[in-house]
Length: 90
Ligand SMILES: [Zn+2]
Image (tube, rainbow, N blue to C red; front, side, top):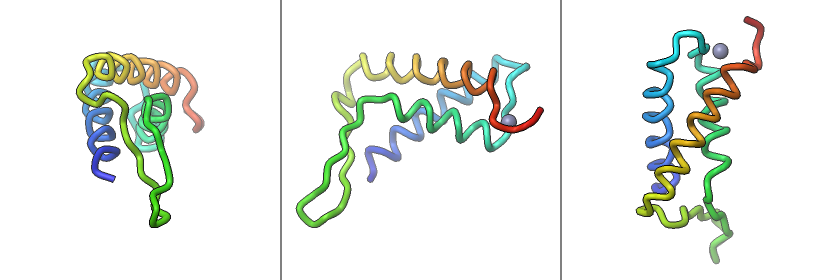
């Protein structure tokens, strides 16, 4: 789904920006995907099943500035949370 990928791209860029200012946070692939998953899960994306059985995801108010703020807030939280609690051994 194009919208979903678009959001993922935005989040990835945002997370990289946040990480570039943090030297003490793990930046391995595992942590990065955890951060991405955390950030994207909290966003107001509605999923529904289409008439042909496919799953369609739509972002509410994609052009709304509130979503961009929400996205940035989510990314900061995701980096903070995963950075403090990496799922692997240090
Ligand atoms: Zn890591």
